[in-house]
Length: 186
Image (tube, rainbow, N blue to C red; front, side):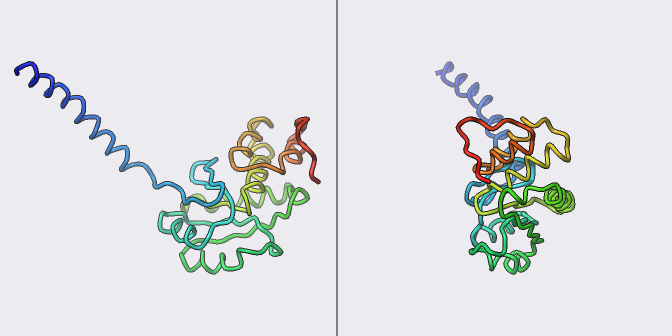
């Protein structure tokens, strides 16, 4: 019986600190990002992905996301409501229209960089297009062109942010060879 009591006391000495540490870590962990399509967090405080729905935008605002950067163009349907909703929710809203590869320019990359730099002190940023592809391309180019990252590292960040069909053009703009299995979609 004494042996069982010692085992219980010994186990309590291990389990109680673990429970305390686990609850302390959980209390310091920020809430999960809103689950927009293809949600990724390639940079601290920056969520990339596809077009959020109104409930997802509302959740983002409730959880402290303060700025929405929309890379979709006016000709794309499905986000007409977004500016008014973001502003009603107290979020800043910026649109940088990127239609495709032709808009992967230094001027647009610089505009995104300035917007991120200005927005991040206010809180977390939700950067989206329709799928996350354009967000990934711009972030890759930003890392290389403006922040001096090696082309391979910049591309890895872009892929982590959602870069897909714009990868061949992004590779070319980074000075990297296209992979043989990629087709070039100009």
